[in-house]
Length: 119
Image (cartoon, rainbow, N blue to C red; front, side, top):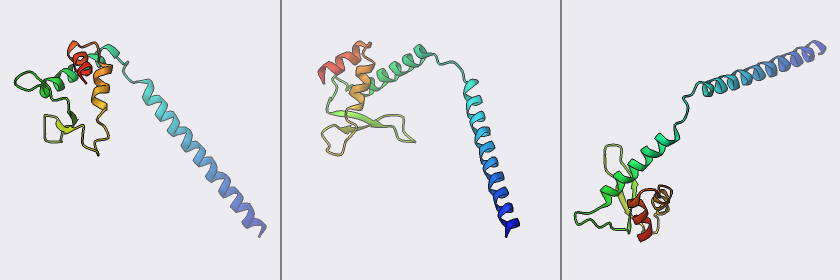
């Protein structure tokens, strides 16, 4: 019985050591992966987002230049290149405020600012 208890204690202790070493290795790999990441160019990313806002506004604009403000871009399907529009008046449309929020954050654009003022 003493040998069995000693064997079991050693087994548990070694198992805990392996778990700890594995955890340390995983943490090291996660940290070393982020150390080699490219620096973030914030201005470049903001310019990209601004271009996407302008692209979306161009899609929302009708032939006469007006925009139906009761419609909001919802998503772009996997095989599509244009936004799927949904009415903000639809009760289950829980993300109707996302696009106006994006326009608000992109407020440097005259078109985006005009769009948010009219909302």
